[in-house]
Amino acid sequence: GISEQLKKVAISLIPVAVLAPIVENGADGFLAGKVNIVFSVDLLTVFLVVMIFMLAAIFRYGAALQQESDETL
Image (cartoon, rainbow, N blue to C red):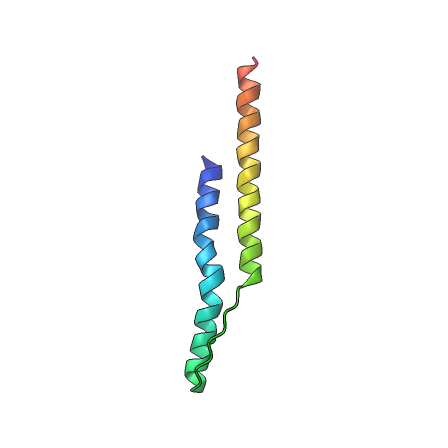
């Protein structure tokens, strides 16, 4: 369902949170003529990933409640 698709989107954003700052710092260092290896994480993307995981959990819980409601009729 939608919760599984949201979970896949969140998982696909995890490499973006880790690799984007590394690539950006590497490109800046390359253009400046320096080798500067810095490990950093984009906190905005991490926050987005956490929010999407939470949204997926809310949808999953709502689907469980709907199924329980349908079974009681």
